[in-house]
Image 1 (cartoon, rainbow, N blue to C red):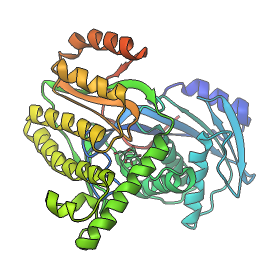
Image 2 (image 1 turned 135 degrees about the horizontal axis):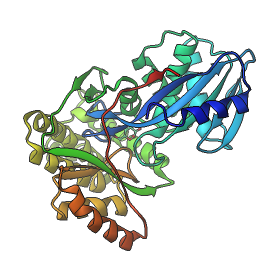
Image 3 (image 1 turned 45 degrees about the vertical axis):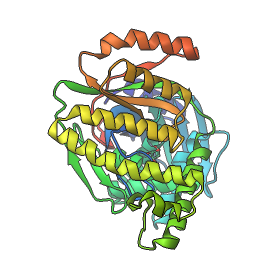
Image 4 (image 1 turned 180 degrees about the horizontal axis):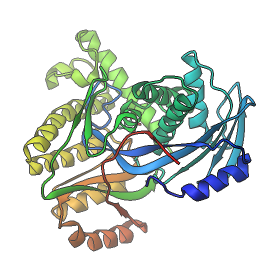
Length: 389
Ligand code: GLA
């Protein structure tokens, strides 16, 4: 991964932006998985993500003119943007870069002009956070190139603000944070209220995690995400009328009748149920991974999937089908990950089991949805970093 297409990309960089004595610097940010704690990172919850070995890479070289020329290898597209930066519907991929520049400048820095080439191998729309990776790698590359002294944690927050304010998705902090501070072989447990985090190495013994991509991308994903977040926020406001001490929906621990008295809508009730039950499952999963009780971990992952599907309503028929099939085929645990509405399913299973179920699953999925699934094995890898070229 460290050197994917680096020769071609350097040549491409020079043919698009011109050859000078100064070589661009190369920076890389990973994709992420999340083992447990889904749709709680904007509600003060705890999450357990890890960086994995798919990546976005950017080549960046400063220049004297006050504009930013950007090239995407994936879209084979070049755009030049100038301040004041505004969203560009013709090249939406460039908004993640522009949003980061805007957010860095809001902190009082000046971002001089540069040329930037971006390439990557994170499957888009797979729920593995290709956009957060682009934000984080851009923020880190700008900070390092111009000596702005921005910590990785701050790069993560800048990326989240870019997504919230410039792109318009009201995401939480999980993706950008783990992509910034991730470490080879370790998950992080992150308290999204305090941003305190710690690294955890889990010995999986005879078990492994892998991913299945449903290859479904839902076009209403972002608006539905924002809507879920709004429902959680309105649920909390109503709960606070009776119980002003709760500052986060994640912390609510009321009985059903106490909740009933808060006059939540049916949707607010269901969202609250997912969020608070996810808190209990997170505890079970972390303890199970530490003690090697993988059956318990697996059953909590299945429960999370059905809670995301039925209570939080962010799954779709395709990922539901994959998880139900895996459950019937006897895998240890599985659930959709990320924002939802398609994308990947994370599977926990015994190492030798995958080859026995692969064919069955591929066939039945193809028959039902006329669509292929992809399987990804992965390694837990480092967060954002510079690659020396
Ligand atoms: C997306 C968002 C994250 C998080 C997950 C769901 O990946 O970017 O902030 O909310 O969905 O857990």
